[in-house]
Each structure stands twice: as C-alpha cells, then as structure tokens.
Image 1: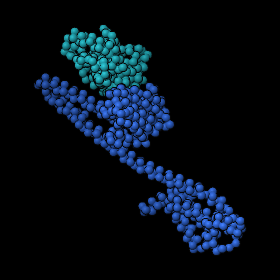
Image 2 (image 1 turned 180 degrees about the vertical axis):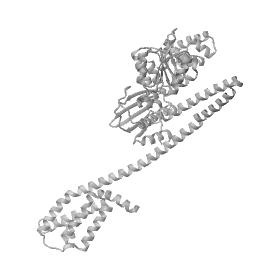
Image 3 (image 1 turned 90 degrees about the horizontal axis):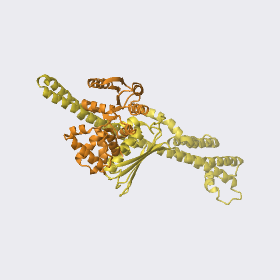
Image 4 (image 1 turned 90 degrees about the vertical axis):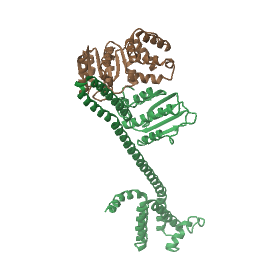
Length: 214
Length: 361
C-alpha cells in the first residue's frame, strides 16, 4: 500500500515513515509543506495520505486545505488528517463531500500503532475514521437532547464506536461481547435515531456522524 | 539640573498653549507705546508675560477685559457730549479713562484708536474664549486619556504576568513532571529489560500512558493561550468552532471580510467564550446567537442568549476580566441582562483590518 506523508517536523516524519514501513506500507513520498503536498497527492496518487493539518509556509491549516483541494480534484482520494487538536469544524469540512476515504485523528493516536495502521487501512479502503474526541464532542452536545437521550448507556457506547468508524467485529472485540450482541444494539440504535439500517460500514458511519452533527 | 531641564522641556509646550493669551503682553506693549516707557508700564508688560506663561486662560481673560475697556473708554470719550443717553457706553470705560487721564475733550486719536480697538476686540474676544475653552477641554481629555492608558496598561501587564505564572505552573506540574517520570521509568526499563521482561513491558506501557497524558495537558494549555483554530483560521472560523463546541445550541452570523490584528482577535474570542460559558453555566440558556461585523473602523460582536438574565459585570470576575482585556485596545463591553432575560452582550473594539482576504468567508 503506497502512502504519502506530509509532516514538517523531521523527527515526526521519519518516525511515521519507519512505523509505517514496519507495518508493510510503502512510502511513496514524504513532504514538508502545503504546495508540495498538493503536487504529491495529484501526481503520485497514493493509496492513502497521512497529513498534518499545520504545515509551512504559513503554519496555519495548509495541510488540511491541500488535502481538501486534492479531494476536489480527485474525488474520494483517501486522506488521513493528523493534528495536535481536533475540531468539529474541520471534521465537518472533511465529511462535507460524503465521499468517504477520510480520517481525522489526534497525533497521540500514533502511539498505539495497530489502531493507527488499522485506521489508515480503513481510510484507504474508502472508509471513514473519526477521532474519539470528535465523537465525544458530538455526543456531549447531544447528550441532553432527544433522540440520543433515549439510548441506553451501552447503546451510546456502541454509537460512539460506530461514529469513530469501527466495524461490528472491532466493536465486539472492544466491548468484549459477541458480534450478534453488537448487531442487535445497532438495529436498536438505528431504530431509535430513525436512521435507515445500512449494511455498508462507511455509509453507516456517515449517517451516524451526520445525525450527530445536525 | 533636572529642574532646569524640565523647565526647558515644558517651556515650548507652555508657549504653544499660551496661544491667544499672548495678546495680553501685546496689549500691554501697545499701552507702553501709548503712555511711554514708565516703571509701571514696564512692570505691567513683564507681569502680563508671566501671567501668560503660567496661566494662559487668566491672561486671555485679562486681555479681553483690557481690550473691551480700551474700546469703551475711547467710545465714551467720543460720544460723551453727543446724543446718546448718559451711561450707555460710559459705564465701563469712562471712569477708567477719567481715572487715568482726568476728564478732557475727545481727541481724533482717541476716536481712531477706539474704533480700531473695538473692531479688534470684537473679533478677538470670541476667538480667545473659544480657543481657550477648546484648549482646556482638550487638556482635560488628554489627562483622562493618560489616566485611562496608565490603568489599562497596568491591567495588561498584570494579566500577562498572571498568565505567564499560570503557564509556568501548569508546565511545571504537568508536562515537565510527566517527562521526568518518563525518564525515570525508561531508566528502570533499561535495567529490567533483560532480567524481568514482563515488568519492563509494564513500565513501557506506563511510559506511553504518561507521554499521552502530557500531550493532553499540553493541548489544554495551548488552547487556553491561543486557541488553535484562531491561529489557523482567524476569528470568523474560531467563533464558528466555538459555537459548535458550546454546550448551548449556538448559531453564528459572521461578516468579517478580513482579519483583525491577532491580539484583538484573541481578546474578542475569549470575550465570546466567556459570554457563551456564562449563558450555559449561569443563565441556563438553550439557544445563543453570535453576530460579528466590522463597520466604521470597529469590530463589533453581539452575543445573545435566551437564558434567565441577571448578568452583571460588576459582580462576576469573568466579564470584568473581559472588560479589562478589551480596554487595552480601547474596546468596550456592554451588557444588557434584565432578570428573566434575554442577555445581550456587545463588544466593540476599534481596529484596522489587514489587507489579506479570508478565503473561507
């Protein structure tokens, strides 16, 4: 799997590259600023890109802007955005095209490398991955309001994991329950939130995120 | 030496302030020409000079009185024996003239001098009075301004110092302590890695946990100093992000064509954050609305909520702090919050916007 890495700090860039190589990814390119990221994404067409939000030259949100621009030119180009902080505003911009192939994670998540590389593979497959902190913000806001308030605690836990972009299998493993129990919770959640049930994992994530963000 | 220097520094300023009041020594000089060089005329001229320098307003007043006196003197002399009813012009001028010259017949020189003086005095008096009341007003304004600047500067310095102390303490108790713990457990891991691999693995997990916590703490610290969206996108998007994260459902209406100076943006951002926090915490509001505009050289943000009202900047420290921070930029905070609500908080900060356009607006 070919990856482009965009990170301006040399140590982090090298660290990410060696971590990914260890997990069998091929580094197609490693860049350190916004304009070269856009060029790399368009020319190299990687299977997935890992992009730091803040990049030179202005050290604002060049990475995010370059990724969004690349996805305008190449719809669905898989991009995993990393940042030291996560914002609902940016999540909304990333999800706006509903095309999937998007991830948005805190840089801290790189520490647990399996989780990080799983997320990267999900994004490369066209899936959607959201940082637990974004999901927590979404849920905190809706906690007191229906219809999320009608969910049981366990159902809310499952909902959060769905919103983070995890599959039924991953959710079952995380909560130490059976796959069947998870899919039962899912059916109940989708009914309570009045969402159409969906077998497609990505469409399921997008539907839940859209519901929580509305 | 210092005293001399300060007099030299003040002198030009005093002279400029004297302005119209300098008419007094001028009038006295004319008197000297008229009456000749005598000890009392010289004294009068010198005295006039001193008064002009020390108390320009008094000098201006005296000059005006002297001019009117001269004019009416001359007039009285000219018209004394004519058809005007007695006392009309005489009242002010004639006794003075009589006192100085004794009574005598009117003279053509008196008439001419009187008419010139009268014209000059009529022209001069309103100007003198106007200029001096203007100067006094301006002076009072400047004194107020200096007082205000001294106060806001002290607040700004105090706030910055308190903020730095907080950052120092947070770093010291947080990230620094965690890095030390990290170093210690890495050293322990190094010792245990061959003899007790299981314990070493547990220590490594602990270290990772510690570094993750340090990151969380640093993130919170950074958000309190300079919110990341503000740094990355400017005030408009930072307010949008704030609205999204607010515990109260908040709508935004933002019309900011360009970016304001960074310190102004930060002050405005924290003002809105405080208003939204109050809406949720104290007013129990369900909805809030942020409206940000820029017009007539000022940034104006209005935060409205449908809570129970009763917010008072004089009581809470939060809004008071916001007010002080805004005052550093000559900004103001206005609160309308009747019991029962709604609460409307308006901040206005005069500032210039940068020439750089915001692409996302």
